[in-house]
Length: 538
Image 1 (cartoon, helix red, strand yellow):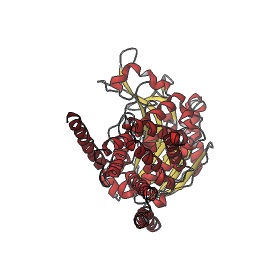
Image 2 (cartoon, helix red, strand yellow; image 1 turned 90 degrees about the horizontal axis):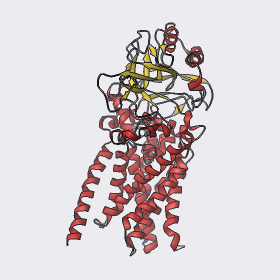
Image 3 (spheres, helix red, strand yellow; image 1 turned 180 degrees about the vertical axis):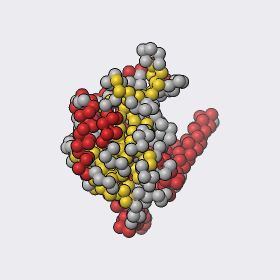
Image 4 (cartoon, rainbow, N blue to C red; image 1 turned 45 degrees about the vertical axis):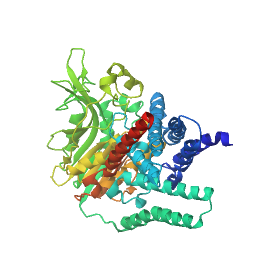
């Protein structure tokens, strides 16, 4: 049994992480999911074998692969190669973060310092993983409580990194109590540590529940309609005539529209024509003027107060090349975009370009370095090369000038500090347009929906969500999801939600826990390397 102890502990840790993950997991399991890995690391650190850090990384790698397979296996439905690559790479990043804790621990093996190192290295990894070419923060542990917004209302102060800190501290508490009881019976210490652990877990929940039950939204009502056209992304959506998609959106939404309706949301890529910016009048798909835009203009003429937010693919010719630029056969330079188009009676045709991309599917990571291999992006289930993007979080104003909405496209709703940018630019509401049908009827679209609740709590902004299929719905400022559509049905929903101008602590200061952890992690890593070199010299 001892021979297979490391293997058992690695697999057990991975299973615990998986059993904690939404939509059906029990997030409290995360309070002890790291414990088998901590025991494993401690055993390796004390044995006589060499390459200790690499052995820790190898065992942790197995644990995190198990976690990924249980939690995000559904990526396979969109891309088999992409899912394998995503799981292998993401698990390796996690294993390296845990390995850095093990590496530095031996140079600071006094009192509670080693456990402090685990916290800063793990949170630093999660923070770094938010904003680099291989970003996939889906499994950042602070996301795990997304299904239970009443327990995490304090995210308005900390963001998801407050949740990560909470989970890590709890794991350390469980580990300490376990070590006390297997090394020597120490009832008094065990009682003290148990009291601290119970307080650590219970206090945030009690405070959050109080905040949840007493939070009252300021009355500032906005009538919104969201549409779910339910076009199969693997066949119908891109094969059907573009006017068919538009007619379906109109047919579904029209019975719910009236003079009080302010916003109408249709999903990502709902316009099935490849339109040229800046006026969006020319369709490459048709080789002539667009059909979709005149149809929508004619439709909106009957509803002068409505502002339509709808997704499409677009392109723009450039005078100077960008890092994402492409070249036509004739030598013209252009960029491709995943676009949110904003239309109303003034026909200004404002737009926003998606700025957070799924690596491989929408962007080529490290494009300058890997430009010769950009065809891989297509093989991973996306576009060839990388899409262009906006550097600013644009906000759209209603035709009557009363309300401002931040347009978020699909993957963008997974990023907390990124979302803050819309609110800092004046957004009183958030609108998410997405296409979750690529993953099929799996936990993928459910997880994506639940993560949007975190953004509502962090920003205290009501959210309207329009999905091609999956779940179209509304989310209030406490993070409650309501008025949901079912999966794989054509539907539309109308609700009155409240706009909000207040700025939360988290919106004001962002991921300060992640930034501070990153700074301290680099500092301790440099000190560790210095101590290692000095030891070798001596």
